Length: 516
Image (cartoon, rainbow, N blue to C red; front, side):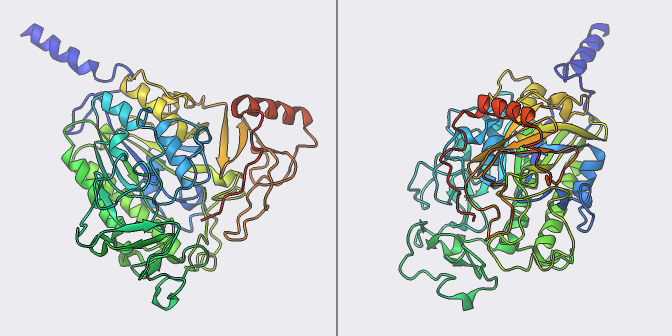
């Protein structure tokens, strides 16, 4: 009996020896924690009330921030969606992959199936893995036949289960895809997709604006689906097409279902929220709730979704055995292609927080994100000023779960994410539509780039200038005082270090991408 008792004590103490965690207390007694990454779309630093002006209330995201580690210097790799998602899942700078830019819905998969990814690494550590929601990393090998099994995709880069949309809510194809197959597809009504030409008989917003319930402002005048015209052209698949107002509920139900089905084994869920990306189509339950129009209402809906995920975890006794990481793919944008009065109804709210720029921009608001780690009973609530990047998540999760795998660009910041250290990364390269800059400590350097200083279509300062720019972010978070002329030694130091990582030809020949 004594030996049996000692054996039980021994096994109970092993669980988290690699990271020295306390014993788990939920129904799921796995020795490794469940991991959920909740990834918002176009949500700015100031859009979360725990970070911003409080005009938009986000009590559920705030619960994570106030109950976990709230990072004030948390960054996405890029100020646009596809590159940031690539960096998050691979732990690799997206500018190393020439295809890692904003993708059309018909683009091939840009993650090499041989490359290390978060889900692939976690699978090797005994995790079941899933992605639910926005994907936007390409599918297939080119010329996808949407009426057959679509491969390669999420399932070929490490996910056991996938329920996704191919790209974005404003791009065709407007269908859900489950494990490589279009959901509810009628074989007698095959889907065809093109980003080059219109199909005979296709109804577009450009030709029939009278059929639209949401008018486009720029670039979104292709196929009409559910009264909204999209980027690109599509015919067929009528029964498979989504209803935008139900999308949030659809993805939420799949995420909750996944949690319940895999509660008795360690799981990894990458939950890609589509809000508040355009078109902003909150369910009628949330319309008018924010007082700021569809964009604000979409954020309220998004926050509710986070609350429902927390409720599902609590119901299953998993909250104390689940590490949650919350962040966003890039900075905010108000008018991004539809006339939804986001600018008019913003009413003093500052989605970009105290920073300059936004989506598509090299300035701070393009990549500085709400960034939160939450693990009830394991992460002591607090605020961290350590600099962290989404690129660091892969290596940190590898350390957490005992994996020896590491990505080349990420750092192991596990102790920082768990609130045990303030020693974040010292420096990083950030990216915006092919252009890159460099941050080290409190200093930010932006190389000279051709192109407009302000995008006419989205009315955001892009960070382009004819000369090098240098800012001290601590003293000047709004980046209004360019110190390049006054601090030549610091500037030269930053340029030298930047080029040692990025290369001496960084920025040369970069073309400004179309903003859509």
